[in-house]
Length: 123
Image (cartoon, rainbow, N blue to C red):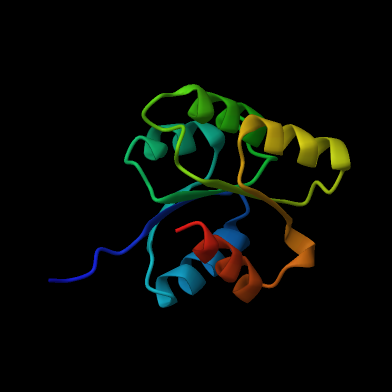
């Protein structure tokens, strides 16, 4: 019996980063779903990914609003959300963690390999 691939939803509006994440995570054996804005992310999270990687600065619906909506939904609230953002302020970090994210990573402080290692912790 084949092992079911873990499904990761990446909600990110930076085209370059989306491509980099997609290539790297697929190479690691993950199924990837991509959303370029918060609203698209909300539609796709209904497919029950095993984990969400979320940017905060998004068009249509920002990461804070996305996180708040997902964590209020009984069917979705247990999906781990790793926030990956350029916002490094302590207040942003505290808000995200209080909304239910499992991890907050500042994009510039982690390599793709380190991000994958962190993500695997929650799968």
